[in-house]
Image (cartoon, rainbow, N blue to C red; front, side, top):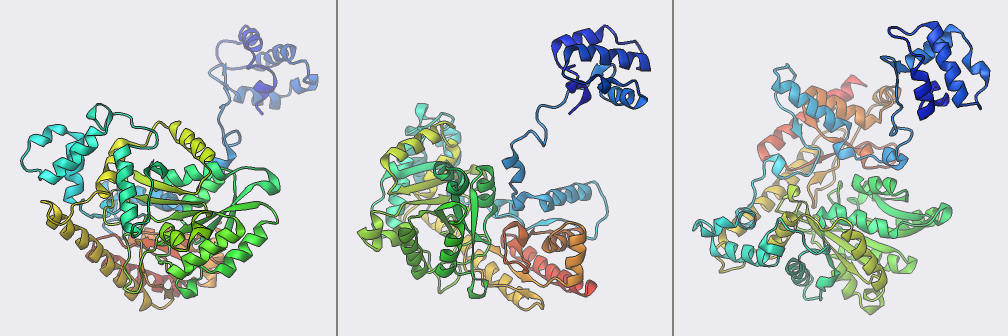
Length: 551
């Protein structure tokens, strides 16, 4: 603590009294000691020896003054701030990305580098990677944002009809207004119809739908409801390793207990019930695990879970009385021919009343992924199944604190849930653009696996879905030692050197979690095909050079 604060100089009386003794000009020995005497009069608990006339004390006090005025300590410091915030980490926007931004600025300023551009493969930002927005989505959004465009005959009639329907459901017929906290009702109805169609006619109730600021907002909101207790009764949340860092960050911020379960890399990142059970039983020794999070298709691992796996997870959740959270934002991104997306809700209800009437489930979706890639709109939804009605009321109260999710994002979600159908004026163009995006992603997924699989020291599972590859890389012992000497994870050292020498920005596997002694990185498959090909070639060449350098 500051000597001046100890002396009570931050009390009004002390500051006032001390001011009378300050000299014009530099602080002298006499002034400092006189000042100390005044402070003593305002803080009698301090021992008189604290105000020794030694030069050391005078220098210390003088150092705490600025232009003759006591320096005020900051109220908010690293020590006084919320320590849960300090603990949380979010690898996909961490130090590697910050350095990538610095390098981009240096290149713009003409600084010479071994590369001419930074290729960001660190995050699933489709439009940021060059994917073009789908025409129909933007036409309807433009009409909602600027209704004068209804007079423009360049806009097809089905786009105008959908925009008109959304605006009529908004207060003042404007998406600049607030909505109900749960979201615009007609859009929630559209979400429910989409889910029913997706799940083969299984009913969906619009009252169980909440429109959110991206899927992330919904995930954190549900965690807030679930986390409670202290010590051994503190809520444990089971998350896959590797995981999307949103989960570990939210768990740290909310001061819950992270319970890891490892995916099986040797079996294409499959989820193993035996591993789940072992993780759960170990965690019950020190916390109260009551939440199981599943990411399907997987991020960062790109796997698509089988129907049998989903059935096993549902049985496990029922047996162990766990709340299920199903992150399904990549449900449109399925590339492997032998894979299919099965929603947890559909499988749950097809397993019969024993499960469909008891297992508590929250599932999440977003406009940020799929074929849309509209990350910046921050549109999402969550569907709640089998939640206690009294708790549903508390959930509605919780989301109402933030008034509502942004209406442009709600509108985008409404458009995605109510797309052109055969016979509509926009159908042909929309369908062509949609499948061009998905087919292009499938080709890049296959290319990524093929190039990595041909590279010594790199093991890559098939990218069955989502938007990422999570290859395992060989890192020589000497590189591990150097990384440890620098206080870095070995795959962080690899990623830093990769960025500095090639301009390629990927995220170290240590930011997602991995089996001890293994090293990975996550990269997105979103860059344009030719750029991705160059990226993969440069990356594999760099890894070969890296291994040689440290062998």
